[in-house]
Length: 157
Length: 272
Image (tube, rainbow over all chains, first blue to last red; front, side):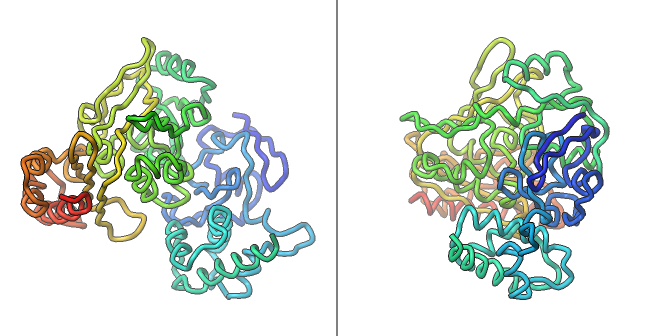
């Protein structure tokens, strides 16, 4: 089946099997391997990407379902000159990662969260990240990263 | 995990979806947000030969205040129910429960109609609809019909939709007072047991989550409340007629005990 979608600003068009999951389309067809597969069962959030600005788990969306949509992955976050997105910069500043496997999904989930709630409390961040699992950090610095990103996005806008 | 092969059609109208269901019969399944169906397909528990994607029928995505009722289009996503000013004002229990489903990513995709049509006894929304005495509007080749929520959930993962019918709208009476109690081990888990109580113009309704093969209405509790019992006494009837399963989360006796505790708490929140 033909799928056509905008991924990180580029119009992509490919012929895929209907059963192709969005995460596999992104990783295998488009070679955007920043989006990780963790649990593959809609639980861990490692595969989180944005569809039309909202966080989704790309292991539970068919590529054909996203045809016509605007998809953003971790590769689409930094500016063209390499300047990191404020959420990415906050992860670096706050040391919001250890092994890094959950990080792309965390960054995308926080980006969506801050769009819906630009100035979340710490508790709102913790609840807002209920769909993203991290087995290294204990979450503390990830939450700090989200709060810092909220402050820097507020300054920018 | 990749699903078994299937054909995929994106329906451009409700009529087209109904016609496609007629054409492909039992081989076809409707796909809305896909957050109930796709996990089953990835595990190959479900292997439909044809998916009819109705996810783009935005005309079925709305929350409306219709004086006596609040109506919710079947393709309204959980996130949109949870943040709807109409739902928050006049059907707050629905908004609250929609906001407890899964996690933000799941709520961005999953729809109220998909969740209800799935008929999972462990999901939260069916119990809320039972407690509210909701009406479900379904459409088939011969037009629309209405099904009371209490007649909708037939058996384990089976609902009263005919093969060519599509759930199009959920209609709930206005409610202000409600209590929702859900026992989970982790935030995003399904309920080990859940209970919901609501007060509408028809009295107090009580629903139970994961207490048997179908979503349940706690009729004996409702009767006790209607005849003047307080929350403690009425909640003693919460396990009547329930057949919960036993698993690593709890035995039958444990679940029945928890149901009484959660029903009491839910009743107290509606002033019983």
